[in-house]
Amino acid sequence: MSEHNIAGKKVAFLLTDGVEQVELTSPWQAIKDAGGEPTLVALDKGKLQGFNGVEKGDTFDVDLAVADADASNFDALVLPGGVVNADNLRVDKDAQNFTRSFFEQHKPVASICHGPWILIEAGVIKGRNVTSYHTLQTDLKNAGANWSDEEVVCDQGLVTSRNPDDLPAFNAKVVEEISEGQHAGQTA
Image (cartoon, rainbow, N blue to C red; front, side):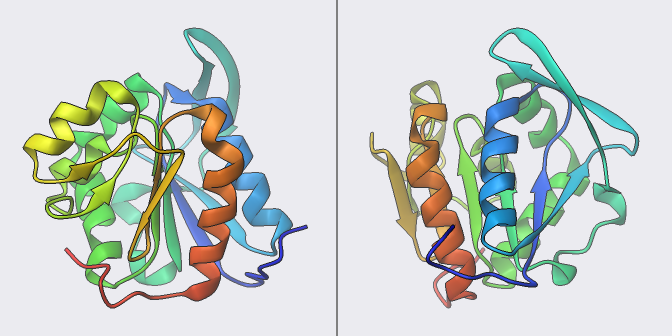
């Protein structure tokens, strides 16, 4: 059980096919265990395919299409990784707008592994302290972020981690940031 209670807090998980499964299921469970209410938001309704590395994993039911999602209905956003997932999400205008809205509303955003790619496309990364999967560091630096190789980096409500090994620290920080609520410095 988490030391932080986030009962009643609604958390959007934005992802699509190709998500790194454990980067969805582990934070999802941490949020549920702390009393939060996760919602799976994807590019399309229906089911999506999770992956364990390059192997197909489970399928997951989509709760809401991103075109129909409104950040004002949620308290926080989680962006799991997975190369295919992150690459498809980052070019979707609805996904970019949905992500940007959380920053405009000063709400916590958490992103792991390849997840931060969409933060570049959403135009919210410049000047922010982040980490990610090591292959994204040049992209993030070129977009103006301050990248470092750390287990978890938290900057005014923006939580980032590198890979599934970081999930225990990532999950704890995500729940903590959701419990703290809005951050004035969390802005587009």
